[in-house]
Image (cartoon, rainbow, N blue to C red; front, side):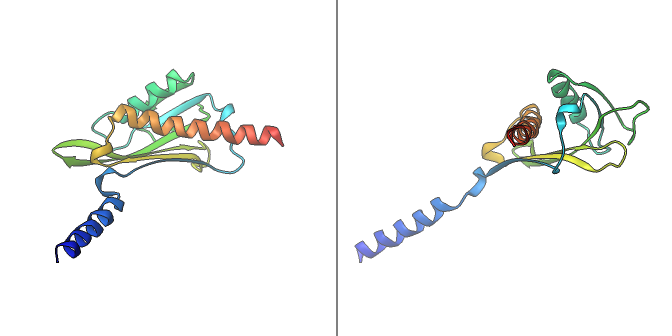
Length: 156
């Protein structure tokens, strides 16, 4: 009787340990085939109407640190010519404190609004990151993916 109880509890604990639970996270990026981000120098970050935390300014600052000329505003199309538009969606969640659950950033063709590159970061409560870290993670992944794609096309 005692041995069967130990086996039962062991099986339950093993099954629970295989579940990702609250510690799951995801960080991805993709490029539209044929996209070369190397020619993108000027960008315009479109501030999301729901954004009360100035995520647009964090995205702008990160892109400026990467050597790009960046402006931001609420207009869907800037007054000046740019190489790419940047749009984003941030999702927030409450778990003792508010934290950014998910961030998606999309670089778009300014003439057609077609997505050139997309990056996403998703972190639940136990693996949460600051909003600054989420922005950096998404943009790092976008530009790393672009760099890998450029390397592959150069080697062909």
